Length: 325
Ligand SMILES: [Fe+2]
Ligand SMILES: [Fe+2]
Image 1: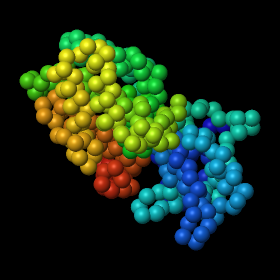
Image 2 (image 1 turned 90 degrees about the vertical axis):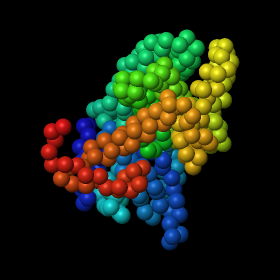
Image 3 (image 1 turned 180 degrees about the horizontal axis):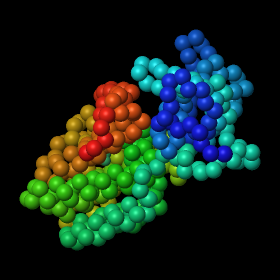
Image 4 (image 1 turned 60 degrees about the vertical axis):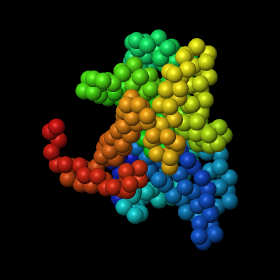
């Protein structure tokens, strides 16, 4: 069976029966004391929140067997709540590989637009091109030791780059942008930009949990307790000691990780104290924000505004009527 309804094309009022990937599924108790199901439905084009009201005991037992990343068949209607589309689910059941035949599983998986292996090789080549032997050894070791996880890991649970190989895509585009910035601001030390970009989110691999479809069910224990910034500082310290990296460079790399979120309320206790660390923050922000713009506008018709984008302060983004650049 081929897919009929893609999330980015859904319109308020649509009635549909379709398969989606279930993410962040949970049973909750409503104000009326009745159980309801809250689930994020995903496919290759995006995500939509789904609600099934008045869940019975039998249904709740069945729904609790659905895991993040499972495919489910949903019958429902697209409604709108607070300017955001939602699916009011009438019926839902788990995909059955015996009886349900789906043409192309890739239709149901949100993935970065480039092949993981190609992105990995691009990034590895940049790491190998680092002139400073100590920085090069750090970047190359991280990539080689973590290749398997990098192939599918998302960069976030929801927000930006929450997709198959999203972390690689994030690193790759930051590297591309960072190299251009070094062409403009010629006083920057490119080796530091390249190495900082490759390592900045390295511990997302241990902060988040993820299945091999790039769907993250949540944070690990260490991720909850420390977060990828503190975890990253520890990991850089350990790796640098193993590789015999000099004290000054080790601490500067740790500082890049420590300061890349810039503000204490976003997890950085210090602001960047050298220019490559400052640039790293802006590369990170730019890539995350522009990803969210691109993603949100993908499903908007020309001349119209998007739904409120939570990660962009609830802004409703505009898509012009013309497509010329
Ligand atoms: Fe980060
Ligand atoms: Fe990042």
